[in-house]
Length: 258
Image (cartoon, rainbow, N blue to C red):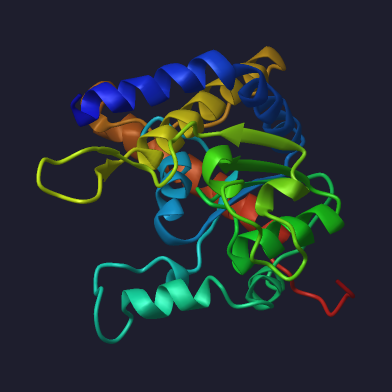
């Protein structure tokens, strides 16, 4: 089978089995965003991609607050300075999540979505733990197959999903890659990214409808080719300022105890 065939199977499985969890996640998000707060979005490694897909993106709206630490997600150098070895090492360092989150006020009225296919590295596990301890609703998007395939590696004996209010399975097979190549020992072509992107857009659209049902409309980034340059620029400015306002409200600016 081709990679597209396998990707379709993943998308069909997400639709068939994860719709209820996505609905729950959207309800949590609508409560946070509709109340004037944010939904933090976090991922390390290639799980940066669904964070960027959520906002800012055409067809997206403010309320989603990206938390991406470049040192854990910068892969294009691969070897040498800022290389893959360092990024993979840093996302396994205990205590780093606390340093990242020390920049923000973690408010129980907000929520967080965490992306990690395996959900076992220290940074995503501890981010989930700290958010849960602070009273945020925690939504985890992960591969249930992968995260439960081996014992946890974190000192707590837990994986990211153990600290979630809602778990959404990206429905990928063990190891992520899906295409067998004649003459090669291992499969090629991962499908977790397309699963993540699908889930992100399902949450985004269902949340938007829930907000609309409450009489709330947020500025949606829309291309000039659709609504004209002037209207597009105005929407961008409105969305940008709304995002900045919400982000400013969660930046930590006091010496209060965490």
